[in-house]
Image (cartoon, rainbow, N blue to C red; front, side, top):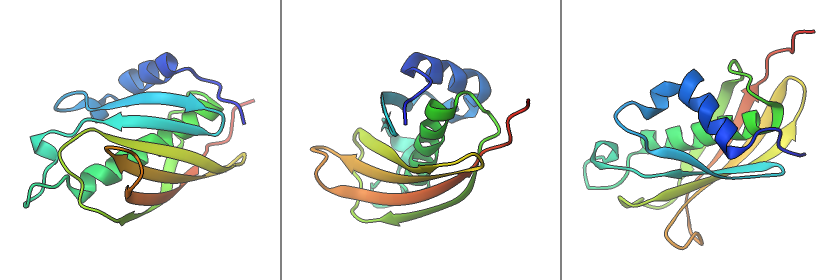
Length: 143
């Protein structure tokens, strides 16, 4: 499946239709769009830490969800009302306060549902720190 949006188009859409992801500062940015996948960079800061000095689970959950949303939009176009219907995440390793990458691969893209796999890495990109699967509902297109 081929993307229908560029990185710049996706950034503009997120800035105008989903500006709340930038509350407290811009920490999410689309780094790549490829056929069937999107990667985002997350630059966590002190507000994303939990006790013990690791990046919090809710911050990683948000990264997976926003990247999955970006992957769907990059392949169907700017459909603001595509929504998460489920997201399951497994936290595998303690994330440090450093740049983090989430790559979402579209497993299925139908007319009404999309199924996405999210892999979250830090540093060398060889050890997963979290893994998620998400399902998005795609609203019917107006004729």
